[in-house]
Amino acid sequence: MTTQSDDADESPRVPIVCPACETTARIPLSDVADRLENHNERLHDGEAVAKVDPDVADRVADLVASDLGLLD
Ligand SMILES: [Zn+2]
Image (cartoon, rainbow, N blue to C red; front, top):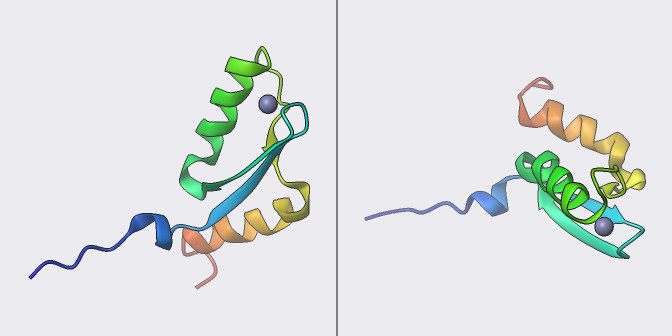
């Protein structure tokens, strides 16, 4: 009997916004840095146009801390 846990459900997702593309997406916390870098490099010549939604940027710090177990 196998129990498969869905990593996507367990990892917190972070909303990102790109005003230039009018794009929003929710990215698993562990992928956010790579996805932002890729997006900005491919579409915006490496400028940091896409970024974590400012409304939750503060909370992301808490998510990271919680993800690392720093809040236990
Ligand atoms: Zn963009």
